[in-house]
Image (tube, rainbow, N blue to C red; front, side):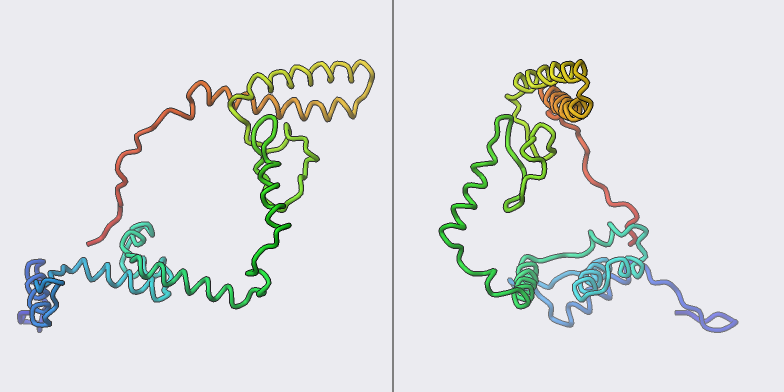
Length: 226
């Protein structure tokens, strides 16, 4: 601080001066690590501590982002530190709170019959063309018309079988049209389109479209304010 002829004026301390003051404060406070060495903090460390404590205390991260002057909220998210013990403690507290409001019956041991039903569900997921991704305990909404179902995960070895099904569907569509079965034509066409889409997906995988890798480089955090 120095005096101007029109009054007092404040000078901005240099980074070196700030660091010197911090080193002196930490030394006077006797803050050391596990082996007794004096810890060293920078002004930036305190920004990170403030962000972590604020978010951990419940302050919304977008508010903390504004307080820190970040242009992008992802910068603030990179500032916050989540320690393993805090994560475990918070998760356990969340589970305890959820269990306190749920019926006790949901935490009982399943019966033998329930276990059998559970295992049979996964046995029934194995289909001719692949695997059914339908969640446990839910009914089949497509009346087992798997060729149309988006929950069908087609096996890569089913390409030839799918081609046979598609050819058969074309023959059945031609037969239905010749007999004037309009409703039958519409339903068979839906199945044919679904089979064709699954064949295209398998061919793309076979041709290596999904096997090619792309180098995305190293992530860079932009908009970081000192």
